[in-house]
Length: 304
Image (cartoon, rainbow, N blue to C red):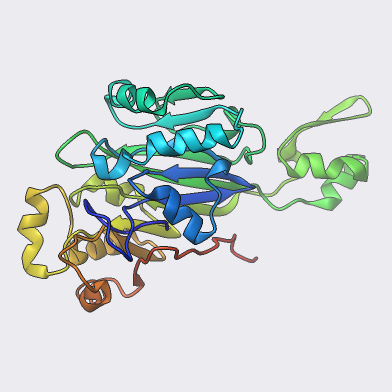
């Protein structure tokens, strides 16, 4: 979590931006002014970013892009950089690309297909089980949140492989979900793997009012990072009017979705001390944490 502020960067709170890293590759969610400074402070390398996923095109979520693109160029980046976002992506990127100037790599706008995209189809090195999908949210402009999932194949059954005569040196290929040739036979992964096991799920809300699409996308998530612009319960109507949520609405969303853990983010500058308002969320959803700049965690598969 690089930044947790809304609209205005504060001395101890950068504008909202989040990185997710898997197998050494990174997705950057939003890129407000100061994202590079926040990343350096958090010890995060944005050079690993293959995809920048924008939730919408308000300045506090995109004004860091030209500088980041220039930095990537000055550090010698040659790999393509993919940028995705809601409707209007090409129009929103036009002035940003003009400000960034000539760079040493391709910047490729993409729309995520219905059902999501496998980053491995864009960049070598991503696990084939990883998928990035978007869902429509409710803000004052076209907006979307993101759901990242990492699937997990069934448990490898050594005895099945032995019975099929598969050499031990090919077992690892089958475990990765790829078929192998064993003698005259083509052995498929499903012949030596059990049923699929529970994978991992991460959801980033972006700016949005509470809405069914977010609740549905977040169902069963291991971690939901959800906007919580306002702290007071009495600001619920204000939040809805501006396409945002307060702490209680974010917590209710997490509760309805049955997530494991909720991190709050995107605090208004009116909120001087976010933990002061934490009880407003925790009474609805106990596993709520006030997000802070630089906070991180590792999501791991459940042990079986």
